[in-house]
Length: 367
Image 1 (cartoon, helix red, strand yellow):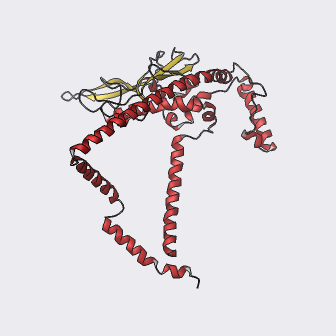
Image 2: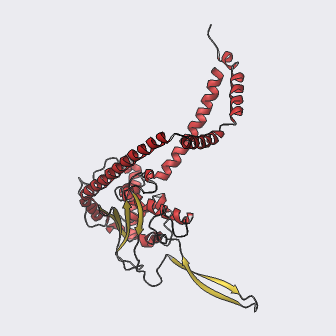
Image 3: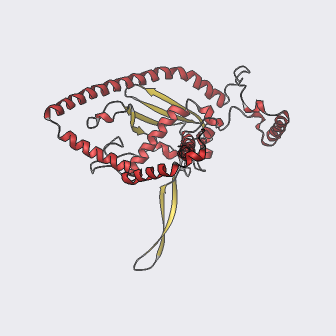
């Protein structure tokens, strides 16, 4: 005889009850972390009680592991050397991109073919409307002679959450003068340099602002097994030669101070750091050390400072690895930002978890 869902559903309360009882006995699902901590403590005690001969063999295994780590470091060094070799092949393409963006070179019809652009899929009526609006804008703004791709790097930067958050309203007029972002790669010492090229402007006299990153690719003596490949450990900014009254990284504030005994009030002017994208070229430093993982003379470095340096390293790496090679995709907004992607994945995971819970309920009813 065929079994109905109602027949299965009759078994569910007992199963649910047994599951709940089991959870109660184990102290709940969240207690698995405590169990893991308990195991780690027990394991450390167990290792400490091992016979000397076994401990000796474990030390030999660690020496083998250290040799493996050294080989891994050599592998990453060769990978970096290969990156530097192939980087040279990108240079002519980046130069051509620069020429197109800044109106120095006009691409041919063949070079400009890209059939998947959205405007090719628009209805003819909308295309005509856009054309009329653009013609009107040209007459009113004089953009019929517009050269290159205006605001290319500014818009590419603002389309990336990790950089867009750094851009303040007072930075925008300056970043409109950003004509190119270039990278240079070097093998010894391992590292790279970011170059931000600017057209002549009223804000500073520099034509290029640089940020240099040094990398290391060797296991730490005190923590050799924490090695995971090359990492940035030091960065150096540059001096921006601001024109008078144009330094957006500083702001002047006025404070009123009252004399304790006399009761008189005076106004004090103070200059403090202002939020700005251009603080990127004045990275935080650690007294006496070059890396956020090291310690200063007084012990561990300040956590906030460590986070600032880590964030700065991540931004520099992101510009080199993602933004410079794929600038046009960020300019158009077609390149998915990692942060947005993570948020989407989290939402999907939440949906999946809800679904799984629903499946559990469903399975429970069908048992």
